[in-house]
Length: 291
Image 1: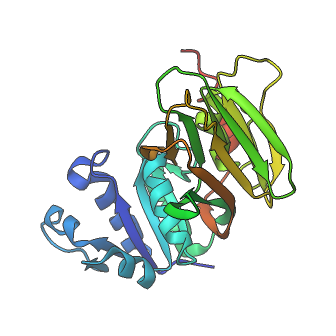
Image 2: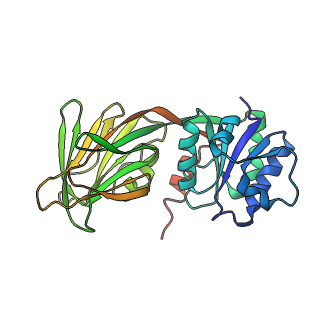
Image 3: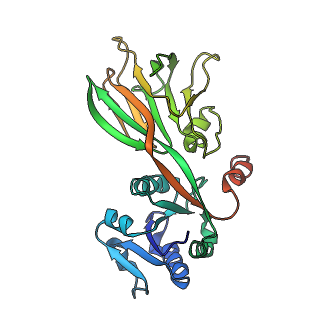
């Protein structure tokens, strides 16, 4: 497999002046790969390089491409790899942020993008979750997840009660500041900070990790990826509304009667990797750094 057309999504906050994006466009052009960019990037080019095409519609841009290139941090990569997954496209990232677990390359390695033209890369499949928030059997929010769903008390630092039920009838109760439902990809994010396990990213497992539970007996639980979960808060009068955040964004309060239904998605994220497995490199270097 080789890439001939690639849709590029830069993070303007990290790539001021389009310096890294223009470097990537040049590397790709030199090996015959066409670059597709949104119209808002046109102003950064004094002259339009050969092979560059601008689109007004980002979905059409992804559809016309063979793959997606993201220049930014893990948050930017999550957003665009989900969009790519829905169109059965793979995504590759250049890290302009911090850890960059999802990224194939660092900003100093942009020249390695030429591997896309020779097929010298591999594609990892990452499981996704589909989450629905329901209130009185009505779906009031729906979102696809690559990292995690965080369900917490609506009042900061207030312990709440949550129940987690599976389709088999199994039930777990938690008293904690909240619970984190994470994919293997998300196991190195908030779940890790809360004491959850690190899971190999291509595994097919769901982890449930409580946030600051008062009991040492309530730790992380690993579940089959096929488990369908329903998470709800206590409906006692003392229970506050619940705060739900998915993939680190769109956090908002929902009524305490809301139920969060979570299941494995029919879609998978396809993440392009070049060279050695950076996941283990990051574990050994960046996560082990002394603060």
